[in-house]
Image 1: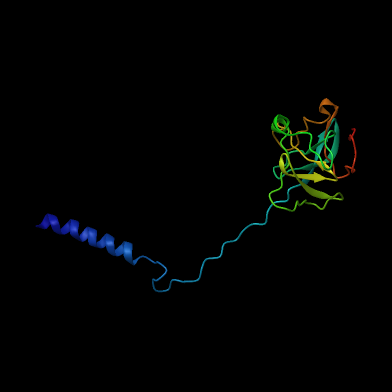
Image 2: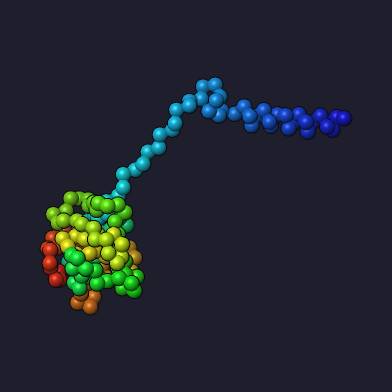
Length: 164
C-alpha cells in the first residue's frame, strides 16, 4: 500500500502545479492582449563606398550590402534579363508596392511588374545583384560583356554605361 501512496501523491502534486500555474485567469494575471512590436522594414536600396576598377565610388546596394547593377539592354518598360540570365544576375525585387531607399536618393524609384516579378528600377534602370559577388564591397560584375555596370546614385535616366 505504501508503494501506491507515493506515486499517487506525485501525480496529484504535478496535476496541481500544472493546473495552478499563472494562466490568464490566475490571480494577478492580465487579460490584455500582448502587444507585438514589428520592426520597420529595411530600405530596398542603400548606398556604400566601394572600390570599382581601382577607384572609390558610391554605389547602390541591396539590404545585404551587395552591389547593385544595371543592364544596358533593359529599358524602363522592358526587362531583357530573365530566366537563366536572372539566375546569374538576380533581380532586385520589391517586398511591397513601394520601393524605399536610405539615404534619400536623387533619382526616381519605381516598380516594374514584369517577367522577374516586382522588380525595382532606379531612374528607369532595372536593378540586379551579381551571383559572383559574395560579400559587401564586391563589384565583380562591373563592365562584364560591355553591358553590365554598377548602379550609382548619379545614374541618369537612359544612360547606356557608367564608365570608370
